[in-house]
Length: 233
Image (cartoon, rainbow, N blue to C red; front, top):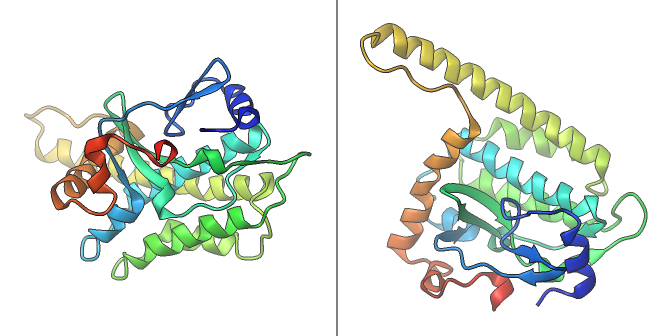
């Protein structure tokens, strides 16, 4: 059960189904029953020889930053979180990496958060993800770790710097996709053209992780049948 003061602050954000593994209704936490989900811990467990695509890393980082930024808007902080707390959840036919376990959020006063554990948690997740990509290190993760190397907290300045790296990666991926699209159209002019680049296209590719976790039945995958999220246990 999420504390009333935390639920009230979350309610100020409006609809949060694309950010977190819960919905807020009338200032109380309403926990939905997502039909399909997998933890980042389990996804990394099946990816030892199957590294993340860079465009999937970009979605992961973008989603985590969006969740953290939204919490900060209402003076909340998820101080400690790990790969177990990042869930890949299906929402209206699209997949999002969402922060779970918001019952452990803390409230802070003032403009900026002060707990350093949040930044360290974010760094740890980046390092674990990159550790699964030994043969193909993520340029985005390297840039983020370098940008945040001297930071003490994940405040507004740090979040904006991180977002700049994500936007730069997004622009690069768009350019690469556009070139691929143009090359495709030159080679296959008689066939239907590829659609324009959009993050939702990449989100549909994340199905592969949900399917793999379901088939392999990893530790978190064992609870999928009960449709439970960490907030529900």
